[in-house]
Amino acid sequence: MDGFENVEILLVEDSPADAELSMRALRKGKLANHITWVKDGVEALEFIFFTGKYAGRPEQNPKLILLDLKLPKVDGMEVLRRIKADERTRVIPVVMVTSSAEGSDVVESYKLGVNSYLVKPVDFEQFSETVGKAGLYWMLMNRTPD
Image (cartoon, rainbow, N blue to C red; front, side, top):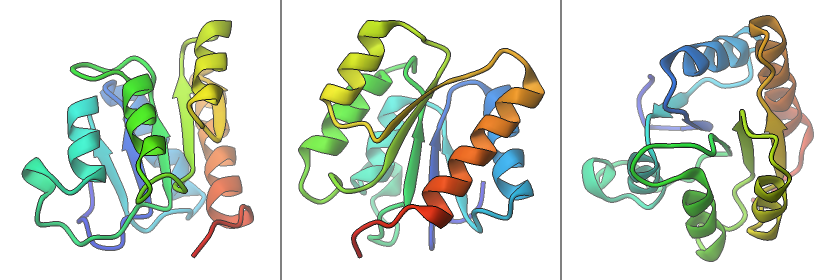
């Protein structure tokens, strides 16, 4: 995990193995100078809204949030709901990266304003490639409001 200045990607993932693969894929593509990894929904909300242990971090939103759906403490759906309900964070692109291919999870995520929904492939190489391509699109190709 890098420092909190100039955070470009916030990775919200409770699986250390999946987090490591994601960070490796993003760094391999030279997509993010600063990736911050948090392990549960409470920590994600504290980071996003500058509270708790993140109360003193610079007030800069990440350029992209990669969000797992099934998280301890507060699930990804609730994290998404709070991000998209707040005027200060609504425009941050959020990509759900999850093992759930349930239609109801996909529909609910889009109703709450998710920007993209990716199902984690079981194969490690495919998983790494999927995250790398998502990062490439959202960090380099997609245009967001300044």
